[in-house]
Length: 67
Image (cartoon, rainbow, N blue to C red; front, side, top):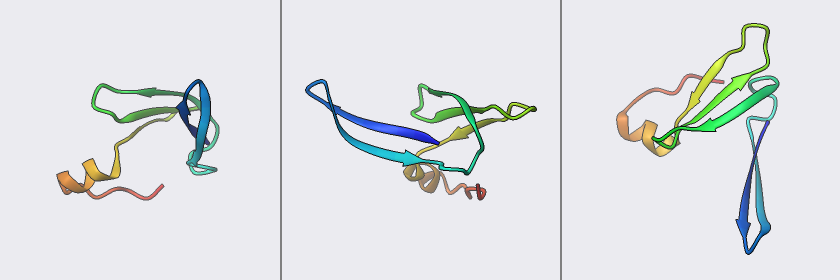
């Protein structure tokens, strides 16, 4: 699971939980220069996923594979 926190005035103003149970245990998350999130799982194979914003995927006409 990835938790996205909204911040304002040094306080948490919102919380959004993403990918609950979809990818397994997540080891690390980094944001790329293009705005995509790169997610590394803690599987024995250590899968790496690139998550693009839905608007970017739709604009490029790319089919998103199911999680």
